[in-house]
Image (cartoon, rainbow, N blue to C red; front, side, top):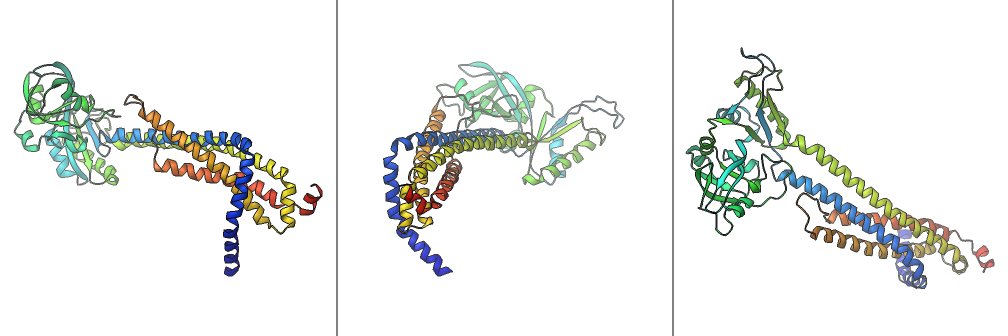
Length: 425
């Protein structure tokens, strides 16, 4: 059996060259008919690339939008009690302090990093040349890693500067441009609510963020909690606690541990779920990312159906070709050609049409995607993204379309009866 298979493969190799030449000659003779058919293939292939690119771009836009603000941590904030607890009446406000941060660090083994912050969305800031209101975040030093506050120039403040209440500040990219348009901001003074802060770092520009805390990071001034609490009169109060896990799969256990630590510290009844909110960023991300994946699949299906409609046109054309060439095919069968030889030639002709139209369509789709991506669109508008997966998927769809369009006509050609075909010549 292996020997017979080897003989078949060697015979196929010898036939590929001559049959390819014959297929090329036939296609050249019907170039007008083929051109009309390939137009549909061009549009179909371009549609697949465009729709998949938009789906991929939308998914990347959402994924990056979450990661710009940090996508692993949990948020913890206090509200009001809804039940009697610890001798207190319902409606008692729950406020966190730095002691709560330390308690979570000590009592929740799943917690890798713990930070706290308070934010003012419109604090008054002033430099030598500009005065305006801008968001200010008063935070502990650990906020840098949790919220992905990447410093492009200078550095972020550390825990020692926070403990010593040093008046230093890290500013967003837009803050740097607004307050120091012609100067290097590092080492210069920026007054926040009338108090001087020395700029020690400028954050890398982030652009659009899907989740923000009182303002985009590009527009924000971040100061240490030790100094900022005095400026804003916070005392030891912290508005929101952020907790990052060692591993993502530890988030549920970490959230339970946070509640286990916080509830008794603030004399909250176990069943009072309204008093303290503990929620993971994954809670916001997962449904939206699932929708993005569903949209990506839907767009891919729509593009594939568009290409499949073009494949129907190719199949109809090849069926008509078989009907027109029945005499020729009968002569070839009478002269010793096998059914497989006729099938191979028709499949080669179909593949050539699909490949030519598909390549032009893919090129058109890529060019249109890159053209849209180059437009000066707002940061909030997702743009198409041509990835290797998009091109691979389009190629696989083209292969499937070519196979589906070529099999039926090829089988019809192989079933030609030589005697009947010769009588009709």
